Length: 274
Image 1 (cartoon, rainbow, N blue to C red):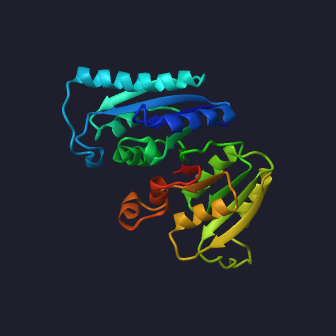
Image 2 (cartoon, rainbow, N blue to C red):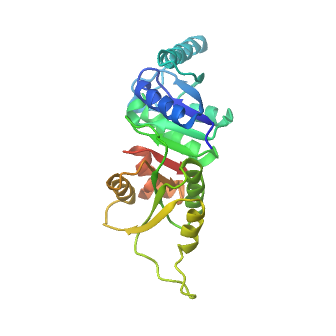
């Protein structure tokens, strides 16, 4: 059950569509929302982050942070909803560490698309740090999407601790009697020495949680993240859930991976757990 949602933003204007969708999601889930506004030092250009910072006195940065929080509070009040708004301000290179050291506690962290952030580099760092060190599942909420009462989800599956955690988090969100499409990228594995399908235990576990399950194996040669999103869209799923950073972060950066691709572009709500 999701009762506390933490939303992360860095600009009180660009985040307006995202916050509207998020607060509608919170109403559906009957959840409380905290909004953390991250205010970095001014940059010569957002695309130069983390370089290109301009020094301003601490009192001026505090004033800028208060202004950004005031913009967010005005949006929340205008929509007649309630949310706690707080903020952190620092050099852009340190804001993610500041957020992690503040130890925010929530059931779910929600972050919008790249268009809802002024500094894409900061968004990427926040997403990676939240997944790797926060211990809280992360929901990517694209523009124009809310999270309805989940009746249909796609679970990207591979035998890994991260995928198991994503499964457990999905079961906290999905409605009884809903459908889950299990999707594995690659060929269907051979039965083990006892003739058992290696996914039988997983399907049995999900069925015991009162969901309808169907397993699919895909491999059309395109990137796994693209296959998962395209499949979820074809099936009309409300959400895609995957385990994050099943490979090391270095390997993801050098060779690419599902997590990295989904962080860059998600076309439907994506639930990530590490």
